[in-house]
Structures are given as C-alpha cells and as structure tokens.
Image 1 (cartoon, rainbow, N blue to C red):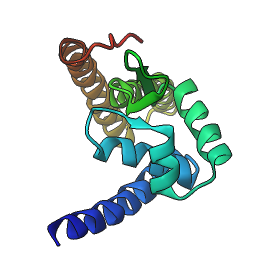
Image 2: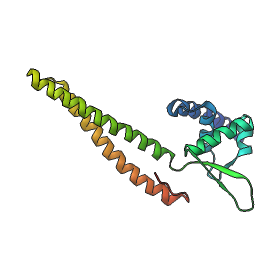
Image 3: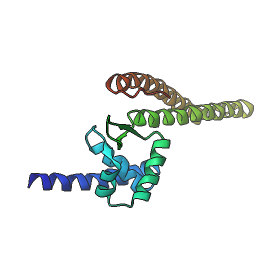
Image 4: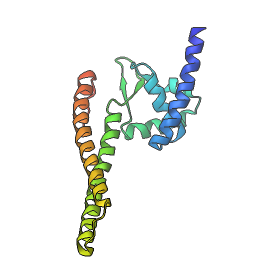
Amino acid sequence: MQRKKLEERKKKLIEKLGAYLEDENQVPPLAARIITYLIIQHDCGITFDQLVNDLGASKSTISTHLNNLIAQKRVDYFTKTGDRKRYYIISSGHIIRKIAALVLKWEHEIDLRKEVLKYKEDYNKLYQTKSHTTEIERAMLHFLEESVVYFRRQIKKHKSQINDLTDIVYED
C-alpha cells in the first residue's frame, strides 16, 4: 500500500514540478516532465525504456526531447560497463548555468540603467531640476550591482562543490 501511495505522490509531483518548469524554462510539457522525472529519481540514472514506459510517450517523442535536453546541457548520460544502455541523469550544472544566465541579464540591465541614470542627470542639469527618480535609479542600480556580486560568488562556490561531489566536471 505504501508503494502505491508513493508512486501516486511521484506522479503528482512530476506533474506539479513539470508544469512549473514548463512555464519557468519555456520548454515543451514533455521535456519539463523528463527533467522532473530525472530530478525525482535516484542518481543511478534512468534508461530510455524507463522514460518511455513511465511517461507514456512515444519513443520518437522521448528521443527528440532527450536529444534537445542533452544539447542544452540540461541532461547528461552515462553508460555502465558491459551494458549498452544509456542512463540519463539531470545535469549537475544546470541550475548554476540557469542562474549564471540570469546574472548576465542583470549585468545587461545594469548597463542600461547606467545609461538611463546618466540621461536623467544630464536632463536635470540642463533644465536645472532635481528629479527624485535619479535617487530611485541609483538605488536600483546599487541593488542590481550587489546582487550580481553576490550571485557570482555563489556560482563560483557551488561550481566547486558540484565538481567535488560528481564525476562530471562543470565548466561554463
């Protein structure tokens, strides 16, 4: 009875986390479910046949999504000695790469906000006004810059931890 309940929880969790990942990562529903399935399963790896069986999709559809996820470095695979099957696992560096991409967006936003701030300062100077929005802009800029510094430090720290815990060396 407990196994049946645990399997039901797993199915619900796959759907719940899958729906979140689908929206958050802008991936097709089945790709999100594959990612979720690999996150939930043990780190011993999941075979292609297990994915087909447990997710109830066609072999070609699973294959297409797996190949895309591997190309995007979201999924890794390995083989076992004497076994021709591939065992799929969630990429150890996926979350770090996702956060690093977010940090790059923030850095771009910092550059844009610096331009906005400079424009506002020049405007205020030319028209001899003092706009409170320049202070808001400075505060937002400061917040973004501190966030970038913090997350860059965390990325570096966690890359080392992941590399120490896995056989797969994470690189940018």
